[in-house]
Length: 348
Image (cartoon, rainbow, N blue to C red; front, side):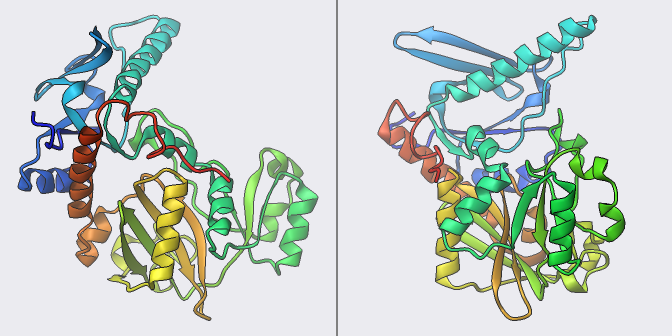
């Protein structure tokens, strides 16, 4: 493979990923070499091993499409890691250990790749911390709702009174950790009522993010891909059941449009993504009836296929172009690419 080649684009995902085909089509259209790794296929239908060869430890993947050497990988599109299952191990504790080792082998092999990442798994993990998102968003000039993270029942009730009963609750750490993405348990943003605040035991069970509810004219999803920002308006207030959290609405009742946003907002979105070490990110914002733009959160692995379908925004094409350009740049720089500032987040 020539030095100016972008190398192989390795797509790390699972068999049911409905976003992968659009990007794979764009990569094939550009003549890129692409290999898909459905991680649930390991160890029954694929293999992972590492070989010390000369002065480097080279991961090798025996996949359904053939053998892939880590040295040939120029870019990694890291979608999801669906955890492997050790079906051949019957003993419960031994099976837990075996599956932990299977996961460690996959992750260890991937982390040894000298490649461009979209996104690096460590950046994804760090970006799940919503307090960090809020801190960085404030530093980048976003307006953020009044916020408190607490498990003190009296403090929570006091905030509810101070905010005129217009208070929402969110998880501090994002969604709950699960072994497979299809098992994800979603906790929606919830507008609280007095009945929700009666139990000291419930309120003190664990901290939550409490925010003053922000009235909405509409919402924005801004998708960052490399140096590009794709903006869509979400008419959540006219949807069926999605006025508080548009994800709860009947999908057919939500209307989307391409939105033109100013250069200053685009710059802030790109800066925030970079601070978190993300080359891809979905940012959720509110536009109030007075026209103020308010930051809500960042989704490091946010879904976008539905937006592309509804609006025609060329997100899949941008992902493909970014992977090819990133792979070419990574290979041109040579060894030593895996652990560097290109994906390491810039903390406060």
